[in-house]
Length: 186
Image (tube, rainbow, N blue to C red):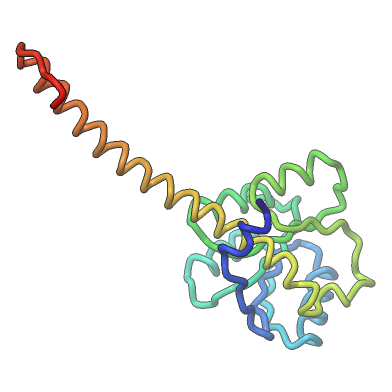
């Protein structure tokens, strides 16, 4: 089943230079992400407040490929941010970052749409920002989003056909109910 699914969805070509949004209150983390991204030829915007990131995304001036966000942020935490992305239908791969390594935190992040969960501290792992590592969460997001989009589209098609079928059917029932004669098969 998994083989047929992946063959029905085209594999995307991601650009070699990615646009990345990093959101964290820890300036050391933001500096590390910015330096690592620059070393790997990625463009990065950093925000120390989630509200700045929301404004940046709503302006739609930059086509972001990937978002890194600290889970525990003031005003809007990582979970709320994922809900915001879903509500606004912003299609961007999302990596949650946190020192919270509990199963509950991981599960909640993935359930809300995160593609990966990085446990802090990771400041010594600059290789994480190499393109080959960053494409993994982007691929997961791409296939997940395409599957959901495909399911939504097929549900909408089913609803349309069910509605037209049920309205045709109910019209026939109403016509039969008005007609007291017996209908014979010919």
